[in-house]
Length: 98
Image (cartoon, rainbow, N blue to C red; front, side):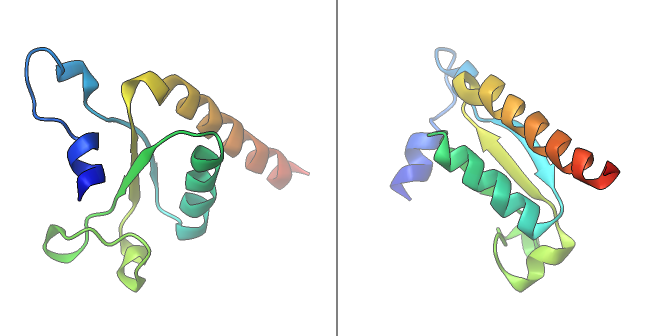
């Protein structure tokens, strides 16, 4: 829980821009795991949320098939994460075309 407390600071006027930014909503478990691995390998801390039954977080559980993975990063890493996201999916779309 310490990680979550550090990741989500209390909202104040000073740190309102420090809130995590949604960079991806991925419905496939394997694709989500690959993208999270890319973020981890590039040193980008992230938070994966997935709302399941009763709004419980359900990442990496059998119930995760039905709900997309919402991946958040800190604002200072959002540009890099979005670049990785675009590169990641352009690579797979190139494979499908060939």
